[in-house]
Image 1 (cartoon, rainbow, N blue to C red):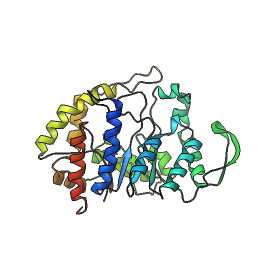
Image 2 (image 1 turned 60 degrees about the vertical axis):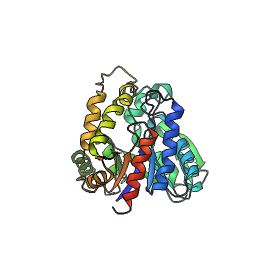
Image 3 (image 1 turned 90 degrees about the vertical axis):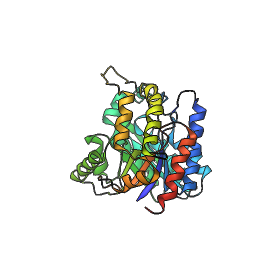
Image 4 (image 1 turned 30 degrees about the horizontal axis):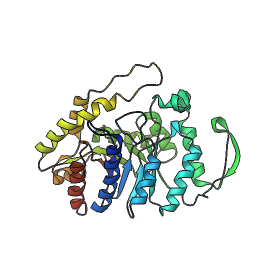
Length: 322
């Protein structure tokens, strides 16, 4: 199995954005030192749920602080960025890091980002597949041109692409599953899904014709001296971040949206996630019924750098025997 660390860079009470970003940046170094295979950063705009607005920029910083570990974006949102510009950045970082970048992309949501960045609701509703195809072309071909919503004359890609960087698509709906399957790209599945739902999405992927098997599952993970202690810490601290954080998801239009209860969501995640001692957490992951062999562990659910580091280091101590 492969194990990575997944970072949201959430801002907790009594912290500022610098605290959150520094905690995430330091966690990258701890993960490499502990022996993890990769580390991933999320991207959000205008919310305390995660204060990293550019996963690719954070990835550049993380690659500069490390020597071995793969750095992934989870995800770079295609609905609010130009695929050619993203491809240029990805190719540059992939070549400068000797192939240590793993690009995760996603459709995002119908949030106010679409209004602020001028891409609009239609781009989110109807443009994801087209954006992804143009991105793939730019990561693969020395010259590109485009028609449709990204119409432009042929241009050379600089830096010139070599071997295409690793590319994974975040999937949360049948539509995105089909998009990934048709292009035979592996999926990134969210931490709110239990093993059964993750397995069902992989089955849907196969039914849509996808044959890739390198799917990645995100999952909340928290390590303490006992499961009781780990659960108590999450129950105490996690809702304090989720409460104001989840309110940051503001729709771009007037569509109704049911807000998640932070306490209830915390309980849901605890119930389906590896939480407890390091041995209990790794046993949970080894026995997973999803069929996934690559998990990225969201280790900063308490917002305390000491607790984040404890989880990373105790799990890292055991990773070699899994």
